[in-house]
Image (cartoon, rainbow, N blue to C red):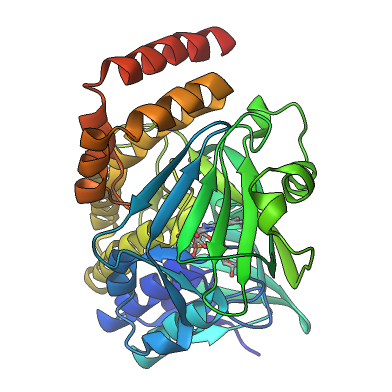
Length: 414
Ligand SMILES: Cc1cc2nc3c(=O)[nH]c(=O)nc-3n(C[C@H](O)[C@H](O)[C@H](O)COP(=O)(O)OP(=O)(O)OC[C@H]3O[C@@H](n4cnc5c(N)ncnc54)[C@H](O)[C@@H]3O)c2cc1C
């Protein structure tokens, strides 16, 4: 096969990559998605919980294909207390991520993007004499080369494109494991916090609507964990946790493991930790997990990835069609303006959570269950923009005390 030539090449066919490609193609750029796996959406490395807003952001119509069930709210368990957060409106859904990703890829194709599977991008380089970037891929037929004016790294937490371009936007990553198994479920997700349950993050169960099945998983932040293998914590929770062990029926239908990037706090302009690299007539952008565009409080990344993908696709096409690569800088500005503050706030909460004691978690859950605060959470709680409700909570003296103590503890631990 001869060398293929595109305006925009998107590396990675996850939600961020598919949305980026759809918007680049829609704006008139010749666009290709390169995916290393044999099929889009497989393997799944996700709990599949997304908000109603994320569903709308996806622009997908055939929702029955991928929605498993509606989630009515969440029950948060600290070691000694529990708090039920009922959602007044449909706000979250458990989805089949494999089908969701496939549908997004179909939409990208309908907009005009090409997709090549089973091709692993090894390097992205600019040859001295070239006016385009050369993407080298490994395929079953050997090494291949593809040319592009703009390459977009949507290749997840271990992004090869980010490494090739020497763009580093993640400080470290959370280690996650999950099984799907038989579990006594209701309509609520469950969140479990505590130092011995999931150090540096939380454990979850997501009901799947039928057959009493749930996704049961957790992430840990290894920097604050006595053990680096998250599976040890999952096994212990399944066997010993007073709530999880009682409801879990012992079956494992499938299991998954993965990582979630922890972004560097780059401020609104990302002066140092950039997701854009311009070299005269070519450019490289990062999007989704590759750009660490995730919510540090919940670890969710599908919504931000799709949202930033739209910006990346549109701007990449504009740069290619006008020949002015400087417009790529607008991507950094636009996405940081939209979600930069939320990420920065989430990082602060994440740091505190990493050093909190079980007593602190108890104080928080107990304080939140006091009715006036609970009403505020129910009214304003938003899984995509949690800072709105968190800011409001910082008027409570018990919560202020926990935050202040753990801010000092974090600085000392660091
Ligand atoms: C256990 C777990 C649970 C999670 N639960 C949720 C949740 O409930 N809700 C939520 O919103 N988010 C969740 N997340 C996060 C979410 O899965 C990611 O944020 C999201 O998938 C990011 O999308 P993306 O398109 O940026 O990257 P990905 O979905 O990771 O897609 C990247 C794609 O790039 C491909 N690729 C990688 N390298 C190359 C290469 N060199 N060449 C070619 N292709 C390549 C990969 O095969 C992959 O298909 C979870 C993550 C984990 C680990």
